[in-house]
Length: 242
Ligand code: NDP
Picture 1 (tube, rainbow, N blue to C red):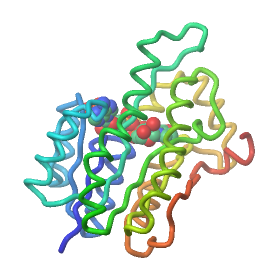
Picture 2 (cartoon, protein in one colour):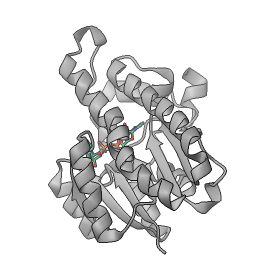
Picture 3 (tube, rainbow, N blue to C red):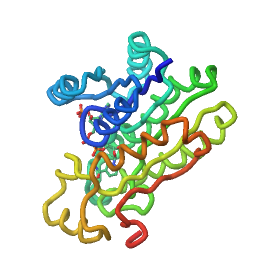
Picture 4 (tube, rainbow, N blue to C red):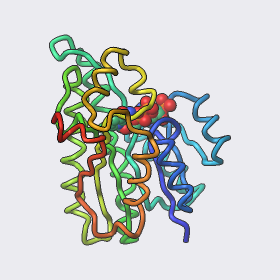
C-alpha cells in the first residue's frame, strides 16, 4: 500500500520542497496551506500534488481537513508539521496578538494536527511524525522571543511524544533548519540578512531541498531506529555562534 504523507505549509518554501521530495520517493502527498491561493494553485499545477486549505492552529479545522484528506487519499502515515510564521520585534514592544499568533501557528498546531492523526497511527502500529523547529528554538534569537519559545516548545513536544509512541512503531523527530532561502528569510531586512550570512560558517543560506532530503530519510523505513532526535541543519551556524 502506498504511504500517504501530509505536509503542512506544503505549498511554499521548505514545505513545498518536502512535499516534492516525498512525492519523488513514491508517497502520495497532500499539501496544506492557509492563505495564498495563487501560490497553492501554482504548486498544484507544477507538481500534481493535491492542496488543501485550512488553519493548522484551529483544532476543529484540522479535524475536518484531515478527514477530507483521508477520504480522498487514505490514512495518513507520514505527518510533517512544517507550517510556521514569524512576527518579529523586541519583546518589550511585543503585543499579545503577535505572541499568540506565533505560538498558535508554530506550537498549538503541533497539538491540533498530531492529535487528530495519532490514533490511526497507533491503531496501525506505524507512523512517521516530523516536526520543523528552528535553530532559533535551540539558541534563542533577538527579536524572536515568541518564535524562539514556540520552536523550543516543538522540541519538547517531539521528545515526549517520541517516548510515548516508540513501542507502537511511530517515530517522532524534530528538524531544526538554520537560515534557508525562502520568502520567510527574504522578508528580513537586507543588512540583517547580510549579518546572518556572515555568521554561517559555510557562507551561504541553505536551500529548501537540503532540508527536504533529511525529511525524506526520516520518513522512510530506513529511519525506524531514529526517534526523539533533534536534527540540526544550519551550515555550522549553531556550533559557531550558538
Ligand atoms: P514560508 O513562509 O515560505 O511558507 C510557509 C508555509 O506555511 C506556507 O505554505 C503557508 O501557507 C503555510 N502556513 C502558514 N501559516 C499557516 C496556517 N496557520 N495554517 C496552514 N498553513 C500555514 O515558510 P518557510 O518555508 O520559510 O518555513 C517553513 C518552516 O520552517 C516554518 O515552520 C519555519 O518556522 C521553519 N524554519 C524556516 C527557516 C527559514 O530560514 N526559512 C529556518 C528555520 C525554520 P500560505 O502560502 O497560504 O501562507
